[in-house]
Image 1 (tube, rainbow, N blue to C red):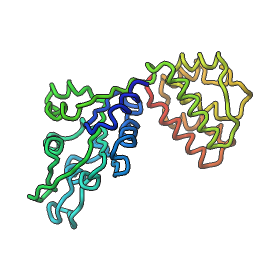
Image 2 (image 1 turned 135 degrees about the vertical axis):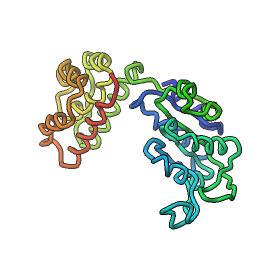
Image 3 (image 1 turned 45 degrees about the vertical axis):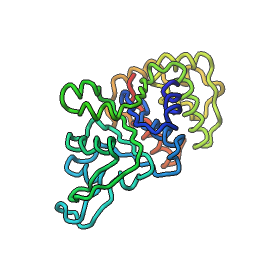
Image 4 (image 1 turned 30 degrees about the vertical axis):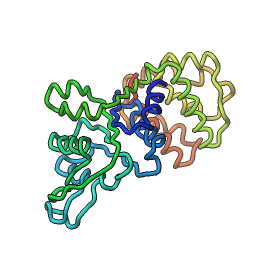
Amino acid sequence: MEAIQRALRVAPIDLSVLVTGESGTGKEFFPKIIHRNSPRKHATYIAVNCGAIPEGTIDSELFGHEKGSFTGAVATRKGYFEEANGGTIFLDEVAELPLTTQARLLRVLETGEYMRVGSSQVMKSNVRIVAATNVDMEKAVAEGRFREDLYYRLSTVGIYVPPLRDRGNDIIMLAEKFAEDFAEKYHTPRISLSEAADQLLRQYRSLAIAACTSLALPRPQPITPSSLPTTTMAAKLKARPPLVTLVTRLMATRRSFNSKSFVDLTLLFLAMISFKI
């Protein structure tokens, strides 16, 4: 996959990286690839979901704060940039950062300097920043929602992760990997795909993960199209049925699993419907 090769090539070079692509394409794996193949691999790696942190506390989370700097600040606290000094910070959903925080982040990228909330002492941080977003950044810049200078600083190297539907042979590779993982986790026989089943997965593509759930269950070898989600399942997934209905259908499989693995299976199906066809 070209995106993985690009991540491996840039990993040893201490540059900021911006990973872009649709939701559900696996962007969160690329910062780990970069970190684990970089000179910083033995230092701290911290992943931050910028979209999940309230605007009022994001500066404190990233840069830390002094005791008494705001209501509830009962003690001095280190921020992620201080905790990850010498390592890598992954800023997921970076486009959700408020403009004031973007200005602070720009200073870190330019000078390595920042200040805790409520402090006048300049601190230094040596971190590598890898960011990710599913937002059209050029549009966000044009609309004034994201700083242009920060955008160019973050995207020193850009990595685009294409959606699963455009990744050709990756579909079969992922299907085999998920099926192998399921077989190992649930102690079921390993499976292989018939040529017809292979073609069916290529046709539906983003149904590969759903198919792997079927593949993990004990079935005759090799797996044929009748063992895979058919056009009927494809139509159901495209219609995106209510989660309660989906879980109810899953109940029919629970006799084949213990309670924990059934929960895992249910969560996999719920995650699966977020993939784009």
